[in-house]
Length: 326
Image (cartoon, rainbow, N blue to C red; front, top):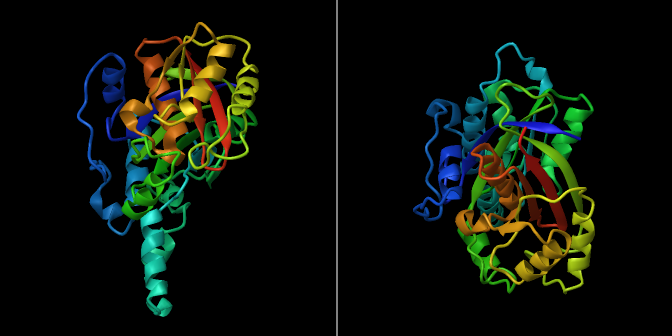
């Protein structure tokens, strides 16, 4: 199951373009942004003025990827899908709506807040802005890249904008930092997007050549798992026929780093290990896609020929994808 990566869109504490990612990967330095991250958008303000920050964050990263892909005007928009993943969605709007209800006046809750708090609001806005009418959904777990590749291989779409987003919420992040599993992590926010194509084009920057995933039972982001989890991770990695040059791991400074590295080294003893989260931070439900965006940039700039990306979601899945030269 192969899919081709046409372009990258990213907003993180360390980068807001594919060029920023390439500079980091080649030894460059960056100034880490404070939370919430400030970002600039090329989308006309009038088109986004009633949108939540969650939508603006998602749509801006998506817009950057779509602009870079330079999708032909002749391509049928009914054949372009939009698959986005998130862990907590528009958590800021959730909180605002809940506070209004808790205040005892649910009849005065703003319709704009209610409609903006659903996770798929960002997909609807992306489709409106770009005229995309293909297969579209929001996932709150699992592998959005594998799902997109399945749709492409089944000829359900010619192109798919695939990504993930996690918006900063001060109250939520304060609670998460109290968890033993995340105390040593730098929690951040971000949006990571890739435009995928069913067929190779002259713009293709790299390709996806394989997937392997499985359930760990619980998410290591939220729960402490024992060392036997390394056997599950090893079993997932053994499904690949060949070794990568480097593994972009889920490492975030937590206890799970040692479990994962033990499993990786047992399966791919010669592979280099790298941790993009040292730059992007732990972006929770966006972490796996953020790693994939880093990997696409690493292959595109010639730093590596084949990168294995790993990540965990908030419901206990361990996802991996192989990205290599097209």
